[in-house]
Image (cartoon, rainbow, N blue to C red; front, side, top):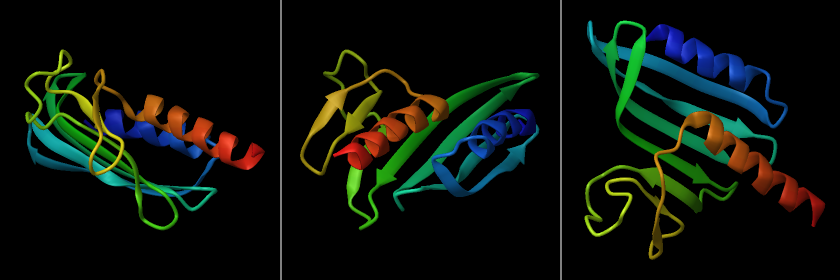
Length: 128
């Protein structure tokens, strides 16, 4: 599972929008563990990451996840997760919270795609 973390850290370390990060993998057994941590961006927004992982040799399966993205005031911008509480969604259990009241269908994201979305948010904020 550490190769999975190393791949993410390489991507994060090269990203000019990221000023700091604290990411770690906690191994619970030879085949299970979790990735957790936070990433702080140049606009002082923060992404909190949690992934429960199942390891099968070189393959890592993300069993459960949540990605909380907060602005500099610690207000929710979005949260992706796969908690099974929207069974009518065609993307069940995957969904995206846009605030406390609005939730929409979404495909299962990954850390790289979420960081790219955050980059776009920051660029849009800077350019206005």
